[in-house]
Every structure is written in C-alpha cells, then in structure tokens.
Length: 400
Image (tube, rainbow, N blue to C red):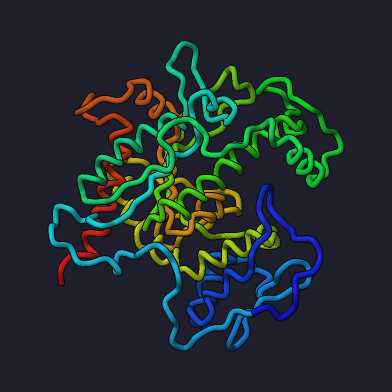
C-alpha cells in the first residue's frame, strides 16, 4: 500500500512509461522476509537500493518522496504470473519429448538486414561475406525452433524477419533524442554525424535517435509482444558476441579471442535503481521468482554450449555484471530485454563473431552434416541449446 503519494517528477529511463506502483498490490504477502532479502541483496541489488527492509515489510521509494509498503508473509501465497516453472508442469509421459507442454519464446537479437550497419553489428573483411549479427541470430532461431518442437515444446518467435517490431523510426524519435542529449548534459549537439567513423557522432541527434530506435523502442515493443501475447514459460535471447574491431569501421580487425557466457537478470547498480521504472520492473521480476528458474536452467544451457562449442568462459572486467558463484560461464547483468520480459530469461552470448575462428566458420555458411568434422556454427549453437534445455526439463519432470 502507499504510505505517501509520489511527489514531483518521476525519474525515468529513456522512452519508459511512468510506473504503476499499484501493480505490486497483487504481490502482497507472497514472499517471506528471508527470500526477499536474499534475492535483493545477493542477486538484484548487491550494491544497495532505495528499499528499506523492516521486520514485516519493505518500504520502497516511489517517485521523489513517496513510499510503497510491501508486506511479507510467514506462509506466502503463490505469486501471480503467466509462466510455469518446470516443477509446475506435469510429469513426462514420453522421455523422448522432455519439453512437452513447455512454452518457449525465441528472441533473435538485433535486426539485421538493412538495419545491421546502423546497429553496428555488421562488418566485412575485404570481399568476404558480410557478417551481420541480426541475420545470424535469426538463422540460429529457425534451427532451434525445429529442434525444440521435435522435443515437444510449443515454440514462438519474437521476430521472424529483419523488420522491426516497433512502429517508431529514428525520424520519429528526434525530439526524444534531443531531450536525452540535454539530460546527458552534452554541451555541443549536432543534428547529424558524418559517417560511422565520426569521433563526435555521439553528440548528434541522429545518433541518439538511432539508439532509441533499435536499442530501446524495439526492445520495449518486443517485451509487449512477449508479455501480452506470447506469454512463454521461458525466453531465450540469442546473440553473438564481439570484441573491439578497431577505430575505423571500414577497416575492421579480427581477434584471437573467442568465448562464451550466459546472462541472468540481476546486478542492478544504485544509479539504475534510482530510476523509478527500473526499480519497479526489478521488483516484479524478484517477486515473480524469475531468478530461481533462471539459476536452475542456465547451468544446463551453459554446460551444453561449453561442451559442444569448446569455448572458454568470458570474464567481465567492468562492474556492470557479477559472476554466479561456482560457474564461470554464468553472470548476472541488468539488460533491457532480461528486465522487461516478465518470465525467466536466458540471455546467451555465444562465439565472438569477429574472432578468427568464428569468422572462418561464418564464412563457410550454413550446411547440413559435418565439414572439417564440425557442424555449421549455426547448427552447433542451436543443437547445444536444445540439448541443454532437454537435460534440464527431462531431469526435473522425470516420473518419480
């Protein structure tokens, strides 16, 4: 319940609607103090949050001066949510179909196609085939869709082409871009930038409007599709990673680094949690217990990927992610997709697409069977994910 009305302007992230704190009413008395404290302090806000934990409730900052009181429970009621954990699904009747009845959404990262260069997830070495992450993730998703369906899953695709889900375009977001540059306190603002190698492109309304288009508006629209229509039990966000490829996009460099990691939602910074919409969205994920399922599924996915790809784990140097204890492949990090999707999300960053080994395999294209004793990189990625999910759900749902 509200202890005081939120006063003053809301502190919001770009393009975010003001939070409706009454959405937390449905979560009253659905969590113990111990579970709330554990999840908040070890997973979501290890460096602190504007939330005061009391003996019987949590006081949550809302707006400039408001508070919301969330009551704890000794015997919690089930939290309201549209997704089901593996333990809530019926036991298996056919071991060959361990994903029977599991609703899985596949979210191929980025857009690809004509948008790939704008996204800066595209490069080309001389006369090679262009490498576009959005096109590659869609190809992996199509293979994975078939694999998961054969294992019994009901599979939905968050995107099936390189057309954006959002109706916005950079041109329609120029006003919001100008406001965002003002908020960032840029002293020198330009209308447009001079090509991808322009060192001052971040000072332009054009650059900011493009970021708002493909990095924020697009993800928010995908979240609306996932939460309002698809309503999966699990979402897989498919990505290829990249290392810096030099200052000149026209002369990209390949690297020897090739690695893998899997992300779970968490590790919100105090600055992020000072934003009202981010704080509310984090609390809903915490109260729905998304992390418990993510932490159970992710090790199986990471193990299958590491085994099939042979890739070493990636290690973050910055403080925007934290390693999950005991598993070097798993990290918690707050990303827009794994925050807004209101179900467990496994966010995969497999291969470094501008590494020499991955680039060579990408240039080989997609193919059936083996070449040089290996599957295509796209089949390998999809097959490993299917194996990991089958192992997890098969073990949990095996008849007792």
